[in-house]
Length: 242
Image (tube, rainbow, N blue to C red; front, side, top):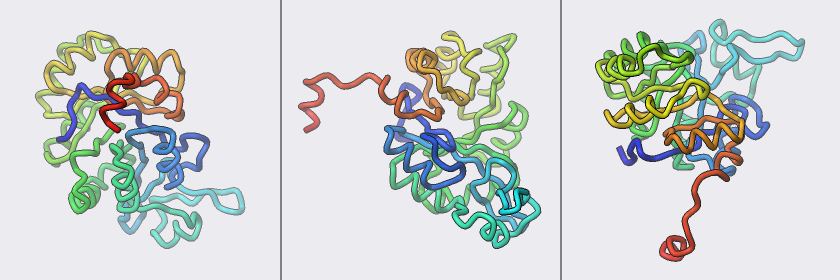
């Protein structure tokens, strides 16, 4: 692991900067806007190919949608020619030196994604979200080399118990809705070695608060705004890096 839970990364959400969802252009746009990571949404075709697809399918010319789980890879590519496989997404994220937030639409793709990450030597730079604590715990037990986060969408009744459960399950961390994230939850998670991510956030005032709390992975459609809020190195530090 080449970073710690004291670091903060801006993560571009799918379709960031008004780009097309599920596209390589979205990853590149986020990187150009200053993001240090990108979020992708994965699902499986009927013949078992992991591709970027966050909405269950692709639009057809007649206004209907092709359901990805019911389509082969070739059928899906016929409907959406710019279809992106997990391997392509990893290679682009790697070339941008980006962390990779993987939204799981189908737990059955973990084995395939694990192989793709291992082949690219990128396992340490990816984490998985869109999971309950129970789901994340089961997958962490089955795939100990991967980094799973449990989503926390409502204020926990007992922050300490939540953190202990995440530790016991050997999770990478917690992905918390900004509105329910507290300083105490963030501090205690960091103290025991867990990472904190947030669900999508685009409000500038909230982005500033998340940075002040030390959230490690801030997912947003506007990485340009979030990047502009990051502390900038002072003139002396900048000169040292020239």
